Length: 302
Length: 325
Image (cartoon, rainbow over all chains, first blue to last red; front, side):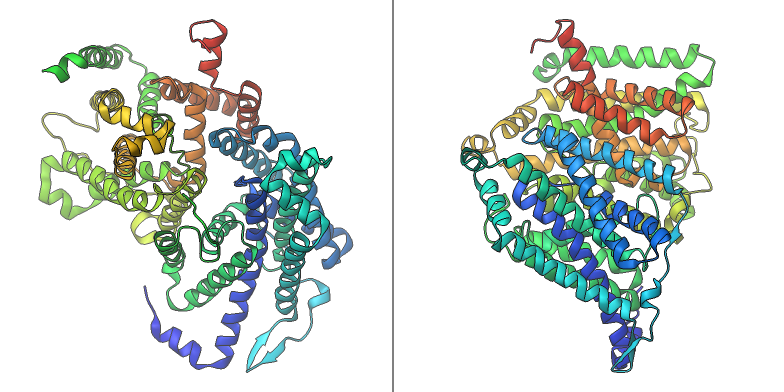
């Protein structure tokens, strides 16, 4: 089960270490995008979007189809994000907003039904087989050499772009007018609507933004992962773990937790492949026992 | 004696139901009603025990099927083990039955100790996360569980006390007795002081604390008992299918169980059981007419949740004036 020799050997060689760190960062940054959307929606609307993984899946499939037509990776990532965002606004307005403030049982059921429906629709449209998008032409370049390890340009691009998107999201929420309205509405929505601001509109936009973040993660991941109906659920569970470790509602917390998890995955795949999931849950359980609010949030989750 | 008089009515109803169920077994030749009822016993216990969490105690778990699956897998694995069978001989089934429930109890105590302190939303998604952990263990530990394919090769069913569980009539009777005992147990818990404590915690946790109820302990005990009852459901399913399958631990199984409760209504004791029957009928009908069962089931759930806003049974009872709003 444990292969520490392989682990030590790997970290003895700079090239292997660089490879593992890059793949850990990739996993972490994509996870960060999904989790930041989840944590954003929770922080403002106080709703756990159990259907969040669906938007990751939808983003990936939209990107795949766009890529087939345009052969442009950047455009397809944009379409994936936009499509997931619009789909998210639709989901918020038509379905989940009807059960805001109601029993959590109702929210669970709406999300459950929504996942069943979209998974089946994806099967109808794109088929049940695994789909591989392949490395886009723009990025078929010679890899960078860092300390003897090879880093494909696509990987470097993904890591930097995810980081930029994360920083932009934090700035959007903390510095802009949109951000302050949304944060104010989260504190006291009757007061904000009394000021003449259409709170439901802002809530829908925020929900759409959260879903677009999941969508762009799916779209960006399309060349490096295979696409399959139901692919969203695995990443949903991992983003739960990220938000628990980082703290609900905290985007910087999500970033650090996602990187921790990404590195756990990539390093674990060398040293203890069967125990990777177990270790992730163990980290989460330890955080929950000693600091139930997450590492980067003050206050109580009780 | 006072305990007996208090529950005299429930015990009589239970005895009566057992007799009816056994009579059905004896006089209906066709295998379909028995097979259908066994699957109702199994999933009914899943739904009824989940309602002990959701309806009695207000703890909305999204990962309850994990304990169903664990019970089923533990039972199946024990009865596939040569050394277990040679050690316990004719008593294997009984020992495996109780050991599986016990294992589930221990596992749920660990999960429960982490989860029950948390607020409602955290509780829901952590139970879900831990269920998916169990699922990934089942799928990746191929040498033990058979991975994706499930636990294959059948299970041994040695004869004990003249009961031969490979005989479909014996198996059906055995399952119906176990089922009714579990439902009776849930009923007694519901009407006991323990049940009152749970409802008090559900309605006002702070008040319960002021009245001296140890909220954490009561919730944890409730979580463990509910999980053990769910594991009995899994055991019945393993007996029935002679195997165990990873889908039991998949999250959709928990979603389905929540929908069963919702269909039948959380405020009626036997509601989840009615919901179980309704959902199985819906599934059967949908499967007959469409290959896109998930799509149709999803739409039905949306209609019930967003249209009726309450369980189908509650809705009908209110419409006909039997249940007051």
